[in-house]
Structure formats: structure tokens, C-alpha cells
Length: 288
Image 1 (cartoon, rainbow, N blue to C red):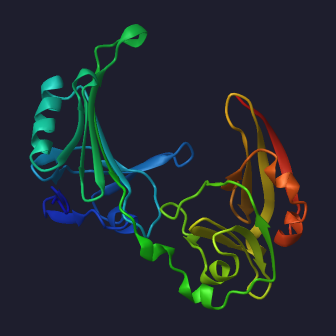
Image 2: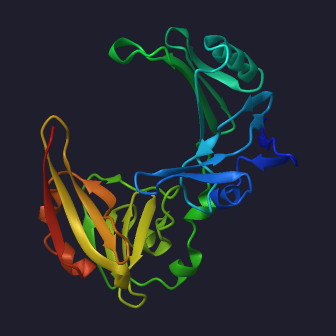
């Protein structure tokens, strides 16, 4: 098993796949790129070696600071040897990673090992925009689970339920604990009282508002919530949906939290009372 990668700095160092985003971003040979508005990425200023494969221009996007980097990638324009470089890398990777799928016609292959998934691809610009350029892409996605990050025992022990509302609706979480630290496991108090039902609750003792659905929950300090909004998308070609969004004080953007079927929450007029906030509805048109 390849446990991580080696940075080819003057003083080489080994980086584990479980090194946190904060730890990797603090390395002296990691730099920030992008303008911070349209997005930014962080990149290694020196090559790295993963097993027998040496890579340049390895980068990673922003992520939760206390979680392992979830996605590394590299893109090389007009690689030396062009398509032969793709074949060379594929052969090298096959010696150390398990080949899951190979699609020769599209010059794309997939590998895995211990919860890591690697994609290697090669393509050329064709058609109207043809310029003779070729691109070699490699990405490594970390799909390992970190259940310790779902624990919130200190807050669970002092939790109270002052008011609540049970929703009998299908749902989809719009956030994940791998991106948002506010996502935790379903609190034991909620599980003991309501089983696996979807519950919106308010805790007046600790000034907290929360949602539990399925195995997960999310909570926000009541005093940090600026506004609550439903972004409503009516079904057309797509399924539409009511996207429950929270805007916290000091944050510029709305945060989509959980999605229900379009207009499903109209059946629960008491929801605003449970949250203690007016719920604004923003009509987003049709899902076409």
C-alpha cells in the first residue's frame, strides 16, 4: 500500500494521505493560487513522488482544515512524449495500484487502493477549437471515512429539546461532514425520542437550532442565524425541490442545508415557530 507521497524538496519529506488540509497547506513549498473570488487552489512548488511516479504541478482545492485533503490533482499541457507519457504512467501505476477500469478508446483508466481512487486521462483538443494541444490529467480522491469527526459528545450531553417538529418527507442533505464542521451524527437524545425520523428542533437552554435526518444532524447557534430561506424550484424536466438555506451573520452567502420535494414544506406552517425565525420563500423558477 502507498501510504502517501514524498515531496521532492531539497530536504525530502513524506506526506501521509491522512495529513490534514491545515498541515499540508502550512508546508513551506505549498503556495496559494487564484483570486479568492472565482475560487482558489493550493499547489506544490516542487515535484512529488507517489510510489514510482513523479508528478509536477500537484494541487488541491480548499477544504475543511481538520480533515485530510480529499482531492489532489495534476494537469499537464502538451506532456513530453504526449500519448506515450499517458501509457508510461498507466503502466507505472498498475504496478502499485489496483486497476479498476480501463477505457482505451477514450484513453482513461481508474485505479484504487485503501479508500483512495485515482483517475488518469489523456485528451486532445479537437473540432472547432482544435489547436493541437494535448492534456494529461491525474486526480486522487480520498473516499475514506472519518467517523470521529461526527462525534459531538460535549454538546450532546447538555442538549435540551424545547420545541420540535417531525417531518414525514423524503430528503437529501446538501452538506457533508467532509466539508462542513457543523455536520455531526444524529444526537442520542433525538434518536432515543424520535428514532430515525426527520426532526427540526430548538434548544432554548443552549440557544441552538438543529435538524436531524437519517444518520446525520446539523446545528447552528440561534444567535448566529441572520435569515432562513426556502429556495423553491418547481419540477419540470427535473424534480425541482425546496432547498432549506441558512444565512449566518458575517457570512456573505446562503448555505443550502437540506432539500425536500418542491412545496413539501408548505404542509408545515409551524416550522417558522420552531426555528424562531421568519422563513422567506425565494421562487427560483422551474427545474428545466
